[in-house]
Image (tube, rainbow, N blue to C red; front, side, top):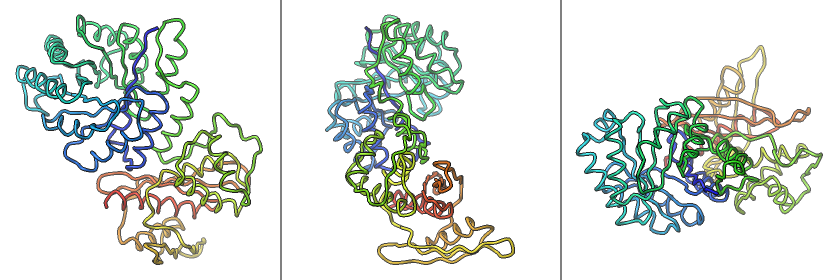
Length: 455
């Protein structure tokens, strides 16, 4: 049996505007799932990034923690310092191989790039036993130069060489042959990273593995080979082809579902492993009862998050009984949230077809009530205007939608609000039997994330 190493790059995706706590929870879940490496982006001199790596290292004990380094030799020092407490550290030297990107981003031509590769790998190897060289944009490089760059990296101490098709310009069989050709005779483990722009990354990765590659980079919600699909295929073909990954296949879909709702902010209303078999919880149920049901749903939450879930459960349960699908949505909307700068106290909405909609909303900030009153084009617009008035800022609304969690008459509404601030998008969710309440709570949830990140 040949083991395939899976390195997950979900936390490297700059499009995922995740909080510190969300990144930590995703890393914990990937480690629990059994991925071989959890990858993080280059950290530079940021104290916050260094703190994130060290915090993740205190929780992730089985998977390798891999930090990228590209811009300078100093980036390797920063990576090594951040990884000092990791059980399994790795420094990942990522460099562009195509001439255009190489000259534009690093201002180096091929001869100087070969010297730079040697310097970077040797420096990384002097500080960390596990070093990976990632040949970015490899399929658009001049092939002879690419072979020379890979050879230099291996001779300088790289333990693994990863070949990338970032532009998705090769079909799966051609990419597999390409990797086999450019890495022939290299004394190092060979990995691949394939863009999923054309939706054939999984096939390309599987064929590369069949042709000798031993590592694949995946993501839960990114632009490379999907972790869910690749791990599932390896499970299916294990016996016939003698290749496998050390992934907990029985937990694969559940854990990935949880990571997806952390990233998207949307509750997953499909419970995969526990059917809605009529079990109902009431306002009289204890926190221990709710905790047991949450664990049966597959969630592994801290005591602090269980407390938040129970508070939200009690708020909903005062109005209706709560089934497993509602509880799943409650977990998604209340756990793994940043500290609340603002909380909803009360609101009054006036609306009709012969009056202009108005909203009066009171939020609690630092123990003090703050009220806003505004009008708008409909009750939701009026409510959001009142919230902007309270906060003292106007946020661009990037997306807003409401979905029902269940189908009965007293179904809960799950609102999703995406606000744009400082070039980033922040997602907030809110849950209620009243869609206006759900919308207000979602807006406040997104604002809390913005305030937290800015502070």
